[in-house]
Structures are given as structure tokens and as C-alpha cells.
Image (cartoon, rainbow, N blue to C red; front, side):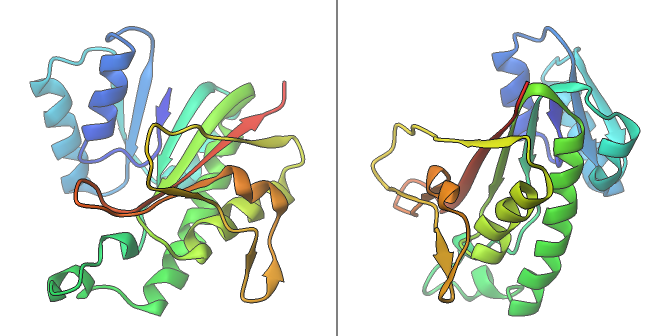
Length: 201
């Protein structure tokens, strides 16, 4: 299992729990202070099967092609889905330019994660953004680049979700994007985007 953007480690800990601290879990983080926080959190929780790597996730696929059965990419994003009315701090760092910058990074991270995936393996791509440029368009780019991918439907135990967009700004994206999921924010959770990709065996 590969956690491609792991810090500060909450999702890595969740994965380790479900794996019962068995098998191999690789956690990658490129920012030094976040990396050490990730490692400290794993050690504090007693996780022994995880290996941490201080490196850019965009290089992982080239270094270890076809190694992983599962990849989680909770990609760095503009955090657009966390914006709240009446809370100016929630949009203080948001801008259309940030969306464009993150979209480029997300495309490269996703392609790297897919390159690291074994045939038959699955990758979950997610963001806390609503911008199609960070979500459906990133996934569509990967589907165009790699023909041996399937986008699997996600069944969620939540009432507040919508299927992914199949068109944006008057242009069709890819009908398979209906299998992705947009989770709408409510009193309990922020908004989110999820897409589950499988490399054909």
C-alpha cells in the first residue's frame, strides 16, 4: 500500500489500523517539517509496518513502477470545499491561480501513483476541492494518457453526494466520470471529491 501525500498521517494511521499493522505501507511526504510530524505520529501510535519517505511523490512512479497493490492519493489542493461563509480565514489563501497551480501538480502526482500501481491494483484519488480543474479534469487527463484504466463506481454510505461531472464549461469531459463522487458539505463534514481507478490485469 502506498500513501502518496501522507502528512500529517491521519489517513496513514487509518490504513495501518485496517491492515492490522501487517503487510507493507509506504508513506511519502516532500515537506520536511510535515514529514517529521508524520513519522512522529506513526511512532506515537505504535505503527511498525509503515516506512516513511521524504521525497516528492511525483518521482515515485519512475522509481518503483508496478510495485503497489493499492495507492491512496489525497492530493494537495486549493481546499475550495472547506470555504465557509462568515469565515474569511477559510478563503484567505484561495485564488484561481492556486487552482491552476494545484491542477498541474495533481496531474503529475496521479500519473506517478498510477505508474507505481500493479496490474489489477487500485488507486483512490481525492481532494477537498470542488473545482473540476482539480477533480474530474485531472482524472480525465489520466484516462486519456493510460488506456488500461477503469473508473470504478463508488458506493458511499452517505446521503449527501452527487455523481462526478461529465461536462464543464460547455465541453464534454468523459462519461465515465459519472462514477466519481462529489460529497457535499454538511454540519458533520467538509466537501470532498473521490475517484477510484483500477489498472486492468
